[in-house]
Image: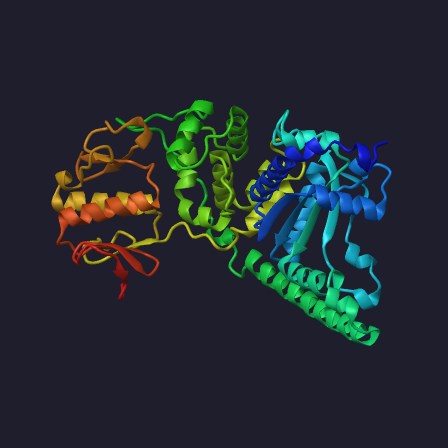
Length: 474
């Protein structure tokens, strides 16, 4: 047993690094599960603070018994996300017996108001190997040296109450100096503030529920994955899905995200195959209906994620609940189904894939105005302009060709024209690139009475000046 006299204070040299590691771990854990916090911050207790606590409590074994030498606080926007964060911590960390509680529930009624989960952990659970606790790192060293690490989880409303109460009552010299009558009045006011805080938390939960389950469900907007026909003359044959081909597809689709590990790519293949897709072309057909920019914005957490995670999000956006059912047991995460449900709450009813309309006299009456996906609209624009202005008008190096000679990564689609003529159009373009190319094509063909609209915004107009403008009618 150690005492304060023989504590090795050189440990404080690396404790801040352990705090940084656990902060990164928790941020990543929340991001992977679709839980967006208001703030996550970890700190290492100073030597002076450690000594003051030991003098006040007289622990026989301060290193083993003071469990907030490194502590981390998670502040969520609502109790919904607070409870989700709690489940994540329970699923990933070994919780010390009796150290998963809310101290506010233990206070007498006249001191009600504090509402914060306190969980003390001693490391990852024995059956969980995330590779996130770096072997030989400072966080691993902390768990083997000290008795526990405290994790606090509270809402923004609970945090505001606690911070003010801590400053004015718990540690307030003025509060201690006033009469018992005045202290009692302040206790009552803090109780009233607690009731208001509880009402605010309940209101935030109600808002979260509406956002998570909007009236218009995403299921009604889902588009089934198309079955690709056998390739015709000059078209690219089906490409088997494997680590190399999936990595290349993800690199093209998510160029600004991290590669991820070989283990992660294998996980991505498992996810895709669980949906019944086993070729690159079929996967591209499914992802074509997904607006990457929109999904990214809805899932943004402020923490960088891998390309496999981006793929996971887009498959979830496309297949919805069916994807959760098919992939809930994929990988090593025992709580994947629950975490997918949380992530789906951020996508459900908020994504629109086919949002492009073709407007104007240049659109033949037999051709539907839409809606199309971005790349689908691009193909129709290329077809229309090739008919109206000639094939040479639409040819674009590396993107649109009159022969099946586009780069393999372009995933060219054959577009039949009149007679035996055809053009090949790249299908690996995201929304922004598709819009830019449509704009270029209309610039070359102008004047032509053809407009491409996304929602209420014209993104390309064959008659107007080259800029986006509000739609003034169809």
